[in-house]
Amino acid sequence: MNRDPRLIKRTRILAELVGDVLSGFVDSMSWKVLVFGSVSMGFLVIFGNLGLSLYRAQVREEARRERGGLRELRSVGLGREGLGLRGEKMIQ
Image (cartoon, rainbow, N blue to C red):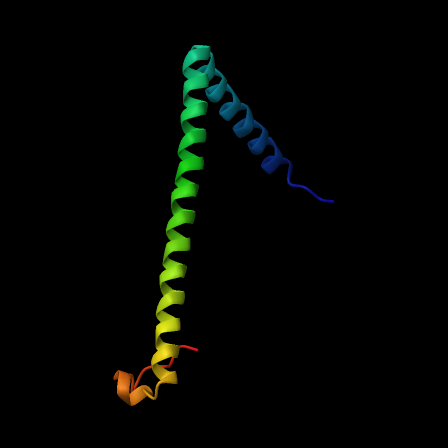
């Protein structure tokens, strides 16, 4: 494989620079701050994901109920015209 030596050199310099910056940032913090930050981020990710998942389930349930309601109305003789859905696609 032909690799550009200039690109490799730049990449190594950038990686070393990023490593030094992160190392200096972490070294200046105490362990308590690092643990607190990690736990806080973990809770943020878990509860954010849980909240969005519950919201998605609620929206799906409401959509399912709405579709079921349209089916019930169609079964008693109300078609598109009875529901005022002339130009809209009927939900199956």
